[in-house]
Structure formats: structure tokens, C-alpha cells
Length: 377
Image (cartoon, rainbow, N blue to C red):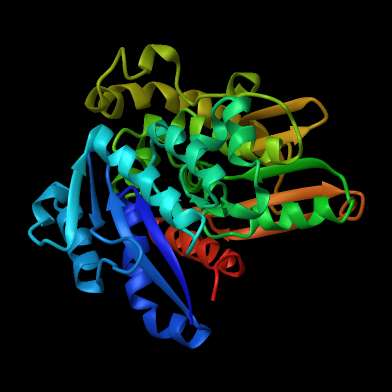
């Protein structure tokens, strides 16, 4: 039986779902000869960690209690009522994570899993990569920071996995890596990488007003609490940057042309969420509908996509043929077309559910198991 010591950073929707997956998959993992030993969990303010990281673990009952407490919006500190656990806050928790990485990284190994949405984890991640640890990311911000940060994080490629930064549980990163490592140069990537924007664009294609579609998407839980976080295109831009860097491009986020679905005058600094939903969105309906109609007359549809080709890396609305993989896309699915020497006339197409905490957490869990061979018996 192999054991993977694991420390989780981020107890939001994806982090909680990951803990639930770990608990529910115990019998399956036992058949595979692996045990995930969770030694600590932390959120933005505190860390709960076992008192002896070499032998102890947070048990399944405790992990499920973490999920319940965080879902209710409470602090992890409310859980620390046992001498078996330590609770630390702020800078103390950061130092402790690094101490644990130093102890486990060179002996039993450690998988440091970042399911946060914060750039505050970058400093810790950069330090632990040199300590023999594996890092598994759902958080896009570390890989879309400066080139210096990126180079450091990927300096030990066998010890980093980040499938869920781009396509949730879809095999995007591994597929591109396989193509590249075979010597088959990728020359074009086009993809719809936002479940939210995929849903929005396919709904307005059916003649529904953008304002109505966005409100429905918000009620279904497809958008962030402030839908402008999705409609700005920044999330797609981060995914595009990760893919471009994977191809060897030395660019930063400000190198990407990003089309927002709303003007700066409707940004968070100028308009409240309520005003945006009640009045701002209505002002966007006419323009989007005119673009939908124009595309339809050309036999095309509109999709919000990323395009990586030549010297161009951009995200925004594109007119695409109805019968193309992207044109046929419906709902919140993601689809990616990869063009290379071998996949030139007919691209390699990856399609499926690309959003949701469940799907993303499943992708993270698969990434953790993918580094199993790096851990001792």
C-alpha cells in the first residue's frame, strides 16, 4: 500500500468537494493500493494540521466536518478542540506549511494541493517545489503570474500537475503534452473554455435576450456572485495563457487581447451588482442580438473562444460555422480544438463538462493519483 501525504490549500467549493471525493473513494483507492493521508487543510486565514505529520492524519469524520463548517461560512478554527491537531493563523500557517514540506518532501513525499483562487499561495508553492514536493493545482493564478514565477513552478515538470486549471476534469493538459513530446508541433488552439460563457452564447443564439440569459445562469449557479467576473473574459484569458505557455510562449496576461461583454462604465468600480443586473445588462441586449443575427445570416454562430495561433493569443466572441465542433457546442460544456502536423485537416477535439465543483475536484483527485509513482512504497 502506497501512501500519499497531502496538504490542501483552499476549502471553497472545489476544495470541499475534493475532501468529499477522497473520503468516498477510500474503498476504491484501497483496491488500487493507495491511501491519501491528509495531514492538513487551510483556508485564507488559518491552518489545521496534525501534530505529527510523519505518522498522523486528519480522519474522514474530521474531513467531512471541515466541509460542513466551511459550507456554513465558519472558520476552521472552530474545529480545533483536540490535542491531535494544531491551529495556526496567517504568517504562522505559511511557515508551518513550508516546515511540513521540508520534513516530508525529502522523506515520505508530500502533495501540496492548491484549490484556492488566490495569488497568495504563489510564495509557498515556489518554495516547496525545491523541497521534493509535488504540487497539484486547480488555482490558475500561480501559473498566470510572472514568467519568473511560472518558470520556478514548472522547474520540476514531473512533480507538477494542473489539469484542472484549464478544463476542470477534461484531459486537456495531458493531451497537449503528449502531442508536444511526440515532436508533433502544435500550431493552433481554439477553444470554448468557460462553461458560463458557453451557456450564455448558446442561449442567446436561440433568440433569448442576454440580460435574461445571464440572470437565469446566475440563478442556476453557473456564474460567480458577480456575473461580471465571468463576462469580463479574464477567466478564459488565464486559461489561454496557461495553454500558450505550455506551447513555449514567453508571454504574460497583459499580452492577451481580451474582449469583455460589458464596457468599463459598467465595471465593479462604477456600478453595483444589483444595478448591473437590473439596468446595465438591458443596455447590452441590442448589440449582442445584432451580432447573433448577422452571424446567422452568414450561416454561423457566435461563441466566446480563445485563439492561440502564430503570434496571436486572444479571447473574445468569434463567428464560427454551425457544423464545427465549437459551433455545435451547447450548454455549459467545454470544447478544445488542437491543430498540429498530425492533426491538421481534422483537429484533435476534446469535449465534455468543463465546469462545476464536482468535475473540477475529480480532475484534481486524478492529478494527485497521477504522481503516485513518485512516492515511496
